[in-house]
Length: 133
Image (tube, rainbow, N blue to C red; front, side, top):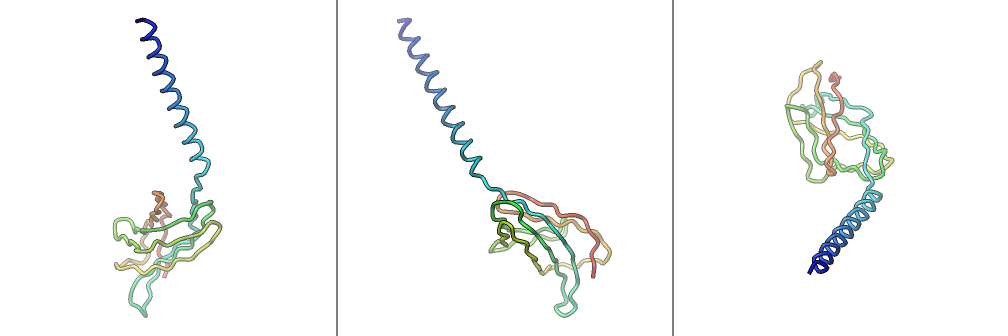
């Protein structure tokens, strides 16, 4: 009877070790295939367009990572959030200028924090800057 229990314990340990090994190998391989996007904000300005009677946010972003950056939401902290039906994409190695129309009124000379939300779950706080007209 003692040999039977010893065999069951050894079998349980062997199955557990095999499962742990498979999970470790799988996560290692997945982490090696992961290609993150790394988005750099080169410039961010807000300006008032008198022709259209509204404010615009002008962002120059560069993706220096290996994956495609998909911006699905932009937030002017505490004031408004702009969600996009189709995400704004920035390919790896691409520098792109985005011109986004805002729906709220802003004040000249005030500092605002802009945040970019990416589909990968990354949130990029841009910077605080003075609005320039």
